[in-house]
Image 1 (cartoon, rainbow, N blue to C red):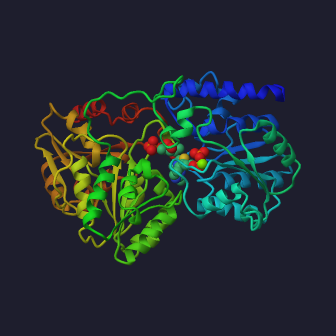
Image 2: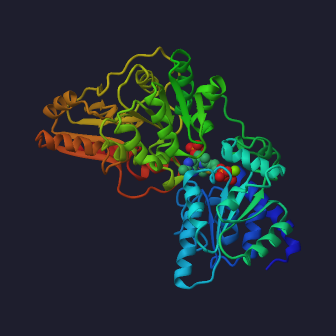
Length: 568
Ligand SMILES: Cc1ncc(C[n+]2csc(CCOP(=O)(O)OP(=O)(O)O)c2C)c(N)n1
Ligand SMILES: CC(=O)[C@@H](O)[C@H](O)COP(=O)(O)O
Ligand SMILES: [Mg+2]
């Protein structure tokens, strides 16, 4: 075991190791650099894995992974077949809880602490949570419960005043006041029956270690407030914390970002959303934009910059974002509530109870639908069609390209009388000249893209691109059905009367997805046809590039080609 006086040098080496690998292999950088000292101090003071250490979100756990037996394979981080970018129980006994979505650590650590009590085990339970994640409702539910238990729980609030984008809300202001020393009384955490200590410098190893040693002897729920700098140790990452949250490739020595080739490319779908909402909102004063803590990732930041009074970052609060949108819609506003497909899972009851049941015209923009790549199983947006399709009143649309995204956004603000979910993928579209004049899309209307004789392929969303390429040499029909709900029944009757074999293609789970909707249609109307649904199988898809993962599930162009050929 290293001596305490050697830990400072060790911290420098750990930081350099993380920077060197992430510079070429990519991943989340700033958060892990910010907790290097904390990570070392925690593993120095506590007896992991006997003591249970949980990382909220887990994007800051690279140091933890490196210190717990994964240094030699850290270069495989987030790559196909490599280690996960987040703590994962199946990967290591030091990863006590699987994460990726935020604000779960307090509840999970409390659950473990109560289990230890019931089993008569004497161990420590430590949840490390960031300032943006602790502001989420779920974290407060955990604190509220923990405060009336005598569970041996230590919550470490890693306060760097930023999430991916700058933290927002009254709690952030409160924490700032605590740091300034102007909020000594009325400590929220003490009011919840926690023993509060701090704020302390989270980069000072000696202070951290002595405070953690002291807290080991304190019984019951306790919270240590530490102040850190996101990106600590790499100048650019400290200065441009938003960019260096996950900067892509960069020069490990200078910190400069890799220069991207100067070629004209189609836009990212998120930017089509971001620019289009600004364009529409300038003309339609009823439009408001909402994001739960993802202004940069969703590109709602364009509207926040141009029309700040009508664009809201509500923090990591998906449930609140949806019900806030519902409230606004009751008053005649047209809320565009932009939530990553995977994070909308958190707000399921709000979609049903607060929006759909009251048939409120909220426009859900589900970015990052389909396979998202290196973030892996926690982040793929492959369930939304299934979890939304069973909800009455809700329209579900998936654009196959940028123009379709723009036009459905345009259509949604022209007096739609019901909620709509628009799902679109991570990454770039296919159209260079994408800023065309708007036109209306008829709700529930599909489109034929190619005419052929041998079979009919029905796709939904941007995966149409792979289908189009795969069928170039085949005599088949291709339909972009566009709406998973309502289905284009007229078009479907024509298709079912014309073809014997029908293939459906989607980047959503086959279970309950678009293909299931077509099977239900066939069963309802007594069509006895061969229907082959292609999509995500009934298993969690791991991490890798989107292309690799599409290949794994048979949705890349070559795999589709083989499947179609076998059916001809
Ligand atoms: C439920 C959920 N919503 C949104 C996200 C996206 N997200 C990942 S990290 C992050 C910011 C976390 O900030 P903080 O807790 O302060 O940790 P830091 O990055 O500063 O260490 C967000 C919004 C998520 N992972 N989970
Ligand atoms: C940890 C986390 O949840 C986010 O940082 C997420 O990785 C962002 O994903 P995008 O890169 O698709 O915006
Ligand atoms: Mg933070």
